[in-house]
Amino acid sequence: MGFADDHLIPLVDEGLGNSAYLLDLGDGRALAVDASRDLRALHAAARRRGLTVAYAADTHLHADFLSGAVQLAHDHGATVLASATGRRAFPHRGLVDGDEVDLGGLTLRALATPGHTDEHLSYLLLDGDQQLGVFTGGSLIVDSAARTDLLGADRTEELARAQYRSLHRLVALPDATAVWPTHGAGSFCSAPPGAERTTTIAAQKHTNPLLAAPDEDTFVQRLMASLGSCPAYFDLLTEHNRRGPALLVGTPPLPALNATQVKDLLANGSQVVDARPAAEFAAGHIPGAISIPLREQFATWLGWLLPDTAPLVFVTGAGQDLEEIVWQAYKIGYERLAGHLAGGMPAWLEAGGAQATTAFASADQTPDGPYLDVRQEAEYAAGHVPGALHVELGDLADHTDGIPAGAVVACGHGERAMTAASLLERAGHTGVTVLNGGPAEYAAAHGTRLDATEGGER
Image 1 (cartoon, rainbow, N blue to C red):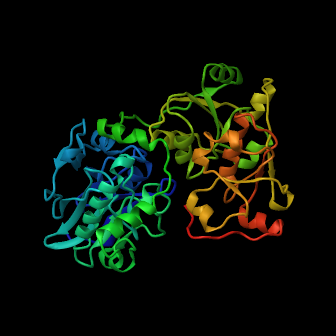
Image 2: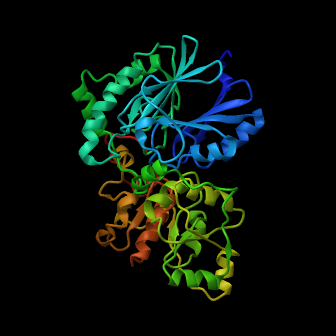
Image 3: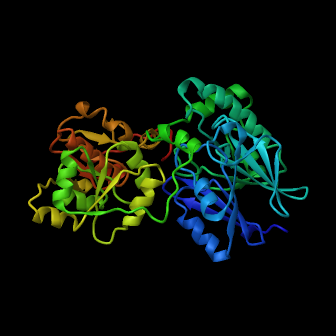
């Protein structure tokens, strides 16, 4: 078959910052690359084109989401393609460097590109001798390379050096070769994130600062200096993906629970996640609940702040999508979902349940007291309120004792700050105020200017 750009369908998960790809092979079959366990968008795209997924390729053992390859093998009869050195414990076709897969007119060639992980493969797509594009997964990404510290601090430099060699192997491809990475803007696997999701070899030669490094040592220094924090659940998923996620039939249920059932669950170690918008949580919530508003980043903060071992009860507001909660949780391996509070907070209050509130104020209504900034390090470096105490949200639960009383808790808009306030309140803090806004609004309202240094938002 001839290749046209519309044969490749990117499937972007804005919350995790990742892209999967569905390649229409032109004969009713398709190749999926780095598909997530949440296959709703992929299935919809396949249905629109009348496609059956014949191949499901994974570039590496993902740490930030559960792979959908095993599910695609079950649902579509897909052949799973993956590195032979990944020790995957489920049926797959193991590939090593140089192996080729005949896709029926197109060819997929495996390229060993270790760095992000040991067993990382990139996949070069060929039409005869023409090198059309390369699925680079967590190797070469737009204007950067994926992080190399996920296998432990003791291996970070070793893998960074492997990443150097892998990137230089990839940029030896023809300039016109398209580059289709998995990790992109918003992904905590990328270092640092960029705005674009696809690129070309030629563009990366000109714009990727890591490739501008004059030697391997400089490359390693730059890459390692760009590594920020990442969610705690990353430590769990590599092994889950090696074993293969459990198969699912449809959307798993999220049972309706009455107030009495919720109280019983809480008494026996369950945790409450309040998925309503920050303002609704502030107006009234179950004491001890953790605020994680249902938005694109829901899975990231669920996996960063809560264990996967405790049953989870969800509080939702009018019109919120329960199915979205389920898939956000399941795609990162959180399957102990006890249910949702039927009727929401009105039902809880009607049954005599206790309620807590949190101050949520605009910048001109916040006090001049201590200011706690819970954004990522790169965001803080880009501009912060003078004298701010900085603790990243992901680290806050371990540092609540050092937070001063009556603090104004802030992030970029208010969602993460409300999550932080809920963690502080659960630890016994009272009198915190959440800033409904960001540091620029606070500085303007309080007659100061931001301290800006190097960095960018994450």
